Amino acid sequence: DLGTREFEVEGYTEFRLAGDRLMTLTEVEGSEEGDHLLSSWPVDGGGATVLGAFRVGLFSETRVPGWAVDPTGAWLGRADDRDVHLHRLDTLHDVGTVSPRFTLQHPERIMALTLGTDGDPVVTADDSDTIRIWSPRRQSAPLRTLQGQQGVKTVSVDPQRSTLAVAGGRSVRL
Image 1 (spheres, rainbow, N blue to C red):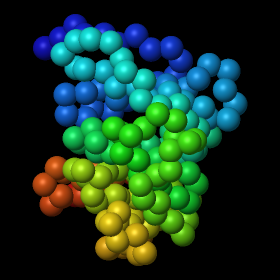
Image 2 (image 1 turned 180 degrees about the vertical axis):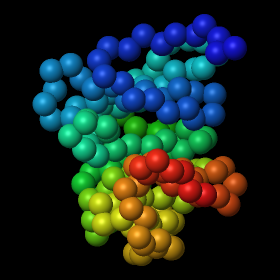
Image 3 (image 1 turned 60 degrees about the vertical axis):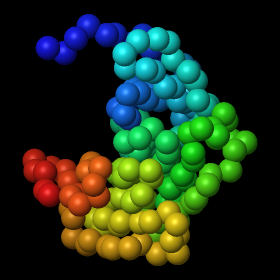
Image 4 (image 1 turned 90 degrees about the vertical axis):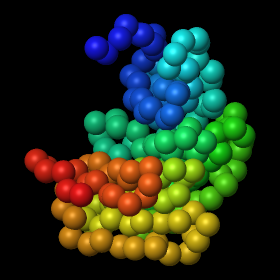
């Protein structure tokens, strides 16, 4: 049974579950620049809290926003072409005025992004078919690089940080 809770949003919206919260990223109507509102909704009832307004990078022309929230709902990761910016959600009001806690500089355009528990690790896939596993606390270089991962569209890491799932084309690999 999926239940009956329904969330009313205005505009194109992507969502992520983070613990007992539903995080939504809603495109601002009429925006040509990728302006979005990030909101947090309690799953068990109640209204949304707007956490911030910002311009988010888009993974492709299909307007899929480049963002992730860690499973605890504490960290926001947003892709901006070749950079990943990590923000603490409890300090977020306007990403344009709040400096990210960490920025990871990526050598290629980012195509997929996920965050582990408490924002560590950060896993990215890029358009050179490379997956990089980062620790935000060690920003200089990835902890691990996996090359030859063709057509990756989605990456995910389990809460215990022991399994990485990679999806692309017609397969999911663990």
